[in-house]
Image (cartoon, rainbow, N blue to C red):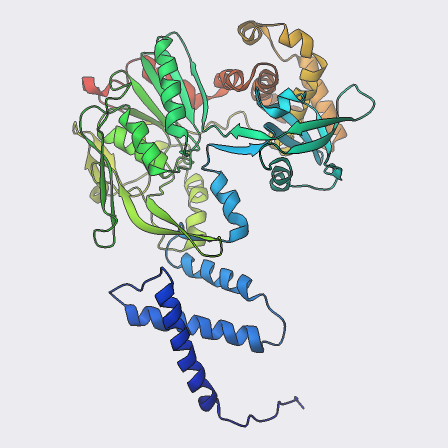
Length: 552
């Protein structure tokens, strides 16, 4: 027979009535002291929901059979509640807020080193030029065994945990135990932390005497200043046409994105507008300043990883016929989030408006089927063949819009490029995927650099790029190492990806010997999308102002 508790002396109603009265009074005090205010449309419903949630949490915390973490439960409940709104309204707990915000910061305090994990060992890929790690003598390929006496090798450390150990207050010191190739014993390296630039302009260089290339990875606090400097430097070198690479750019601060777009758009033209509840969050943003590149052929390179603020830039330049958009349909995130700092250090990022391009296109794709389906949308695009065939993409007539010069563009989620470039998977194989998943290509390149460092650094990059080639013997050494690491040799798979592997090995070696720009310059050889963009901008196809009809 089940054990029953003793009957209460008072009825449940008698207990709950004063409790509810107390809760009402307490909530009135909290609501009066709290910055939160219920909306005018439904104040009673909001207050009842608030009281209901607090009452249930109180019962769970006090009476549930097991001990519970009430704060963790409330965080979970809040996260699930926001999922009912849209996929981009999120709650960030206090312990995760700093890490989430770091993505959009233009600098941080740390040692200044790019690293990777090879065989459960933290390996230096490259110290930042002029940064604390380089000044302390760290080299590409160095393996970090311990940080401040705490072992970090062979303990399954994550990238996030390693970041936490290397970053710290400016001026503080961190002790690293480092194993260097061809040295029998580990060495101790003391690094004094300093302010480290967190660049969002990955690279800027001339692809030929006139064609500039700038890759922007996100729109962070310092992006516009970085971009402005890069654009000016390229113009001084003779740039007359530009490829702006926004592939994989997930967005960021809207004002940085619109200031960047303003560099290309003349006069006073609408760049983007937002619409929210009522008119509180309705905005219209126009070009206002005299930009540095308002004339001249311009290509914007996008793909399915380009989202939010990067879609604002692409959409504005496309709608004003200022740029040729090349690549594949963008992600389709057109919801505006406002960060709201909460009292405990956590943050609410709440959707308060929608983005629209100048022609009136909504950038946001549908999320009516729920968060899980929304997160699988890119997978469905691939399954439907959208990444490989332009004719697999269909738009309703109701989604048709016109640019300033009358070209047809489409809404309904994301920015559809003027020139479609399919994803090139011809060089990929299951064997290549296994090499990448084990980080073997990058590790092999680092070891090669350490073995040939003097001769590589004695060679100018231009000479390296023209003459250096990964030999068949080196490819055989790579496959032999892969076999020792448990990846069986696959002759057909290796044959299919040989050109790609050669290019990536060369690019990683160039990264260690000559820096990030050299890395991107080498990768260009196997980058079909960038090659198409380069031809479009140099062949004159980007000069939309001349009335050229673009391929839809």
